[in-house]
Amino acid sequence: MQLTRRSRWWHHEGVARWQQTLTARSLGAVVALAVLAPLGGTGAQAADVAAALVPTQSCPPTAVSPQVTPRAQYVSDRLRSAGYSAAATAGVLGNLDYLSALTPTAQSASGERVGLALWGPTRWQRYVRQVSRRGVNRWFLSEQTSFLLREMSADPGQFRHRRLQHMAGPMAAAVYFHNTFVRTGASDATVRATRGAKAAGWADLLAGRPVDRRPRDNDTYGLYLTCEPATGTVERCPTVPGSFRASFRHHTGFRWRRISAASQQVSRCVYANFPRIRLHGTYRPGHMPTWGRALDFMMPAGCVTGRTRSYTRSGADLALGSRLAQYLLRRGDRFGLDYVIWQDRIRNPHSEHLEDPFAPIDTWRVDRHNNGDCTNTHFDHVHMSVTMGA
Image (cartoon, rainbow, N blue to C red; front, side, top):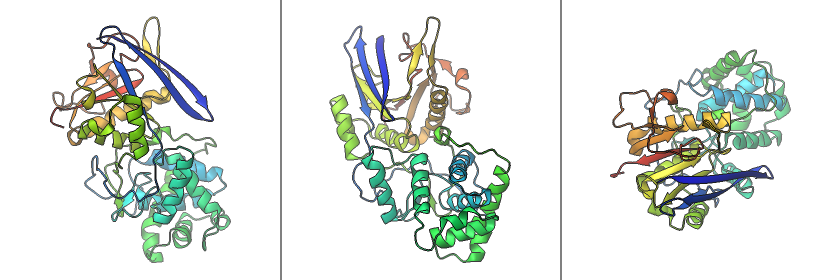
């Protein structure tokens, strides 16, 4: 079946909105794309957590965590732009690295503390209320960093942000930030040996790097981490909120819970780990292999069908979609993944299990079952399906 899909994007108050019309030349298929609604409610998010893939080792307690440099660079740029010295910034990074491996989806072992700074229940729910009022996904690194900066500028308790801003030593900054802002029971000696050592590592790693006054957090999502912070877990896949389920039903005509359990899990994980991808969709009839076992993850800026070729409209979206494809393939066994299609290429982890999931997209097999415009050839979305038994 050959489909023709036309997409239109526009921006209103900084929020991208999407309208799509789908016509089928043969079966009259009706598209069903769910707009990811903001998380509703203010209850604790510790319950009903589905893990996508749990790293098997803890991150080094006295050195920078591997793979998280893009996040550290983004947070560093935000702190430096807010007036914090390089040393003060490193001190904050050392604490955040120790707490969460700089990961927005982190939670403590008990499940009571959540997010980039492992906020306690009261502070986390304050953050959730703020972002929910604006209809924003709470798992954005940019949003959590903004909340952290607002908290710091409010000078809570014994913490004074102007004192931290001008500190000249990463070790001293790490100890001060811990003792006045984070406030655990760890001794100064322990803090210096762990968070302070991480702070020194980040100071060395970021030394001489120019400050980006308008940083983007797009490349901080979907990182594959080989370790977890000593205090908890980073691979969180929270439950889909009621507002999302209602939106899904409104746009599709059937209940979200009717898609397969494995598809639900993938949707939860992508929602939390790729918050820039706001649209998850499926349709019937015609979505392969079935509407309940397949999902499309739409890129924000769409795609273009030219006279000679199709392409993803945004370079940032091309990188984002490629990271998502790799994220899914890395977790293929856990997700019960059948195949992934992106950029008119297809990968099946079961028949191609010896291949590197990070292999360049252009080395994948050409998908010969899709012909037509850039949507049919998967330049504006990543398609995934799960196996029959998933």
